Amino acid sequence: KINMVAFGKDVFTELDHIIRFISDKDLEFRFIEYMPVCSEIYDRDKFVSGSQIENLLIEKYGFVSQEEKGKIIKRIYLRNDILGRIGFIKPVTEQFCNICNKVRVSSSGELRACLFSRKTLNIPTILKKSSLNDALEEITSYIKLNSKGPNIKSIFSNKESSSIRMVEIGG
View 1 (cartoon, rainbow, N blue to C red):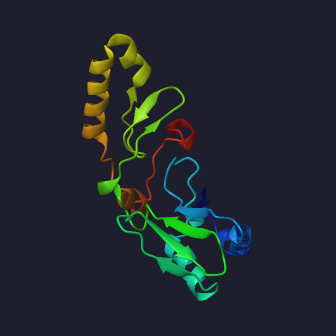
View 2: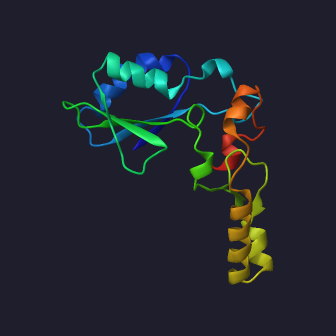
């Protein structure tokens, strides 16, 4: 799978290249909506909704949607004459925070239970001061208490964004 943030209107002109690229490859090319992470550099004008690209795939390129059981957070599009698939993750226009089960660990060992949470837990520090069982208990407790961060739609619609840079998060 190849993930790409849908960033700016150039993504529409790149579709021809992407379709050619996946035509003979058994892989999924996945678009992820550009999220309001890092207020210093987030450019709202670069936002392209997944639906805009999906509509173009259907109308111009003849792709059809494939339903995936239990896959609420992503959609897959296929075309009979192409081996690859095009998928979408739309965290801004189709928020899925309530079912998200992802956590991130930065290169410095900071655990973040939500991409938009400012709260972190330093795993190396906990491992140094606790037994392994106690550390696992503290990490599990942290994840349960902090896994549902701020509502991404409110962050996006209120013209706010996080001050956290993706490079600091582990993405």
